[in-house]
Length: 229
Ligand code: FPP
Image (cartoon, rainbow, N blue to C red; front, side, top):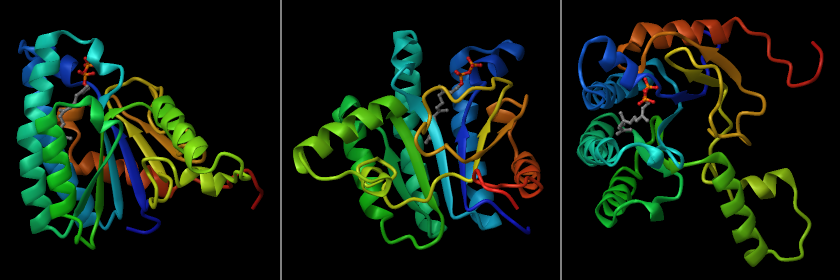
């Protein structure tokens, strides 16, 4: 595909509504959503996308019922292991964005293991945002910066190096599934010049074809980064 986005970031939305429409519990939607993470990771890697960032759990998602949060956490524990196997088989490097210290010790260990074991992947980078909030990321960055560089001059580039996304280019394309059209605290610094694509398709139904459609829409956009052409 010509003009393929190098970095695609996705807000995985609509698991609950997908399940409700089928008369299933919300947790069944999360299970289907977690399964779809595998499908889209492989599809993106095969298409030649270099970075795929997925918003799996936000700093605000803790407000959900204890039952729902615990289902999502156990799905994550299970799917992260599958993600590792899939990553190793497909030369994918996995990394995490967000404040992992807010997760259970077990999950933190799994994240550290998956990061380490896949660090040699030279194909696509899969970034999973877990306990991630954009404002939280910026505040954590400022706090570290104040400690490490209390008086120095700050440039955008230097500031970016304190963010969770250090070393990654900004997303070219941000996709949100399931009809909502907002960024919900996802990568506010990094999405400044990204193209947005919204679809009514719920995350569990977001197929490889849907990903291609989003990339085709991106390819036809005229990006000017505030300048003229
Ligand atoms: C959004 O749907 C989905 C979530 C908040 C959780 C998604 C997380 C997973 C499926 C686990 C992912 C696994 C890996 C390995 C990344 P929603 O519940 O907000 O749907 P609704 O808006 O219809 O209620």
